[in-house]
Image (tube, rainbow, N blue to C red):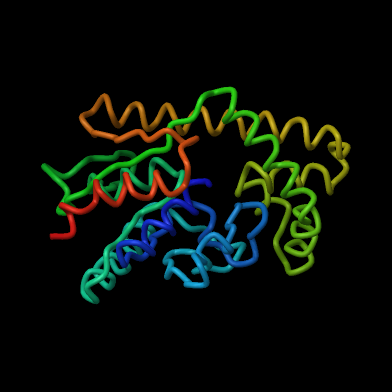
Length: 241
């Protein structure tokens, strides 16, 4: 059970709603390549509400300033309705930006004295070897699910090769394959390596957050799903009072 499924199960348990913190899942039509896994938002037949997924068209340029605004609107809406917001995703910069309260100005980033959000950080701790195995397995699964065809469809709908290169990772390498720069095998090999590097950078970002004072509660990713949900729900309890 990955982070999205865990977050959805926690929300089902506590009456929460998920706010996505993924920098590319905001785009409509970019589903397989960004790993939206929308089925994860259904728990025992219950659809868990989610926010900031599929909010802009592919081809548009979305940025962290827009994300901060959209996050604030979603967060305030959830709180106003008496629900509990659960921020979930792998984009460490996006998470840090809304929790720490960045003020962004041209050419620099500053952080306000303290965020108005009383928050709890929870992460899934996984060994490097198992993480690598899962990343590679997931890539092959997404390829089998039609990731290449998704890229072809996006191009047919008007997305340009430059757009694909801009979005990076999966779409960059798919574009290089579809334009004949890579063979299928080369695309798969290079993309696999790039995803591993990205995952490593994300972990470096979270460790950097810890060095700056953030307390991240790391939970063993190999624990049974029910145990993970119980642990996290127990941690969240004081924040719901």
